[in-house]
Image 1 (cartoon, rainbow, N blue to C red):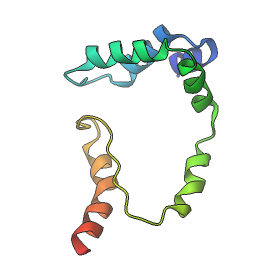
Image 2: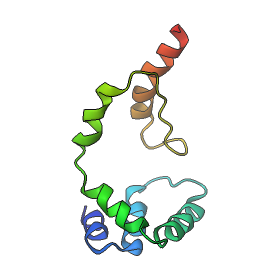
Image 3: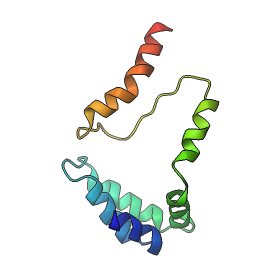
Image 4: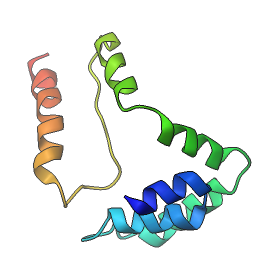
Length: 103
């Protein structure tokens, strides 16, 4: 939590990379180094870190408040397979898969 907080306060690409490294403690994607290099390049572009910091300051309830306005099927795809949390990924996707099969 300290890394995340520090990255947000200082707007440091290095601290953000350290936080991401900490966020994937067990199995990192096979292209981890390429992802980090791309993230570093992206966050050094003008305005990118400012946008990331603003996103970090937004309340989690903001997104939740908008969910009632979604009136069509949606599929959430989150990067490479989440081998650390397979049950949570299945819980998220199963209702959508059932709905698609019934349609």
